[in-house]
Length: 276
Image 1 (tube, rainbow, N blue to C red):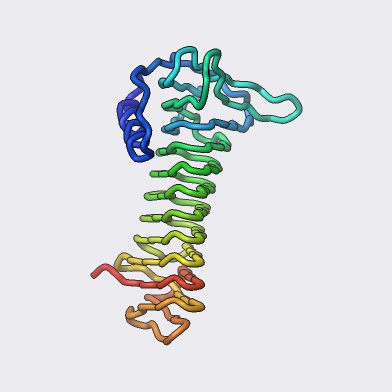
Image 2: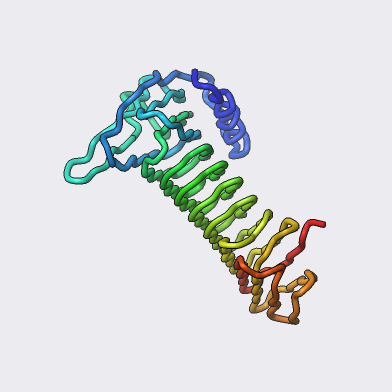
C-alpha cells in the first residue's frame, strides 16, 4: 500500500457519512500498476466517483494503487490515436451501480494533467507542471503546487495553499480558500465565499470576484499592493492605513504598491485586514 493511502480510506468513509450513505462492507484492492508515459503526452483522468490523491515526483513513471467498493475494478490506461494524450479510466466487470474508488497516483513532474471527476474528493500536493481539475460535486485541495493550475468545482469547496504560478479557481455553491500564494491568482464564485490570506508583493496579482458570497482578506505584514475594492450592494469594511473610500468602493496602497489586489462583489460583503 502506498504511503498516505490510509488517509484516503478515511476520506472516503467521511464522504459516505456526510452524504448519508453507508460505505461498502468490503474493500477490494486495486493492484499497484506502473507505466511510462510517452514523451510530451498529456494525462487525462476520467472518473465518476472517487477519492483521489495526486502526488508529483521527479521520476519518469506514472504509478497508482488503491481500492474499490466492488471486486474486479480495473483502472486502464488508453493511448488516444491522433493526439498526444493518455487517458486513465475506470473499467469493471461486475457492477450494478456507481463504484467508489480510492486511488493514490504518483505522477512525473512536468506532466500536463486534465482531471474530470463527478463526485468525491481530490487532494493534490508537491506537483510541478500544468493541472486542470473540473468537478461537479467533489472538493478540491491543492498544496505545494508550482506551475499552471485551474481548479473548478460546481458544488464542492476549492482550497489552494503554499503554491505559486498561474492559479485560477472557480466555484459556484461552496467556498474558495486561498493561502500563501504567489503569482497570478484569480478566484471567481457565485454563491460561496472567497477567503484569501498571506502576502501580496512585487509581481503578485490577485483578482477576486463573487456574486452573492463574501470576500475576506487577511494580509501578512510586509505586503505591498495597490488595492481596489468595489461592490454593487455589499458592505465594505476597509480600515487599512492608506486606504480611502466609502459606500461602494475603497482604494489605496500598502507599501510601495507593487502588487495588485482587485476585489469585486455584487451583493456580498467585503472585509480586508492585515495581521499585526
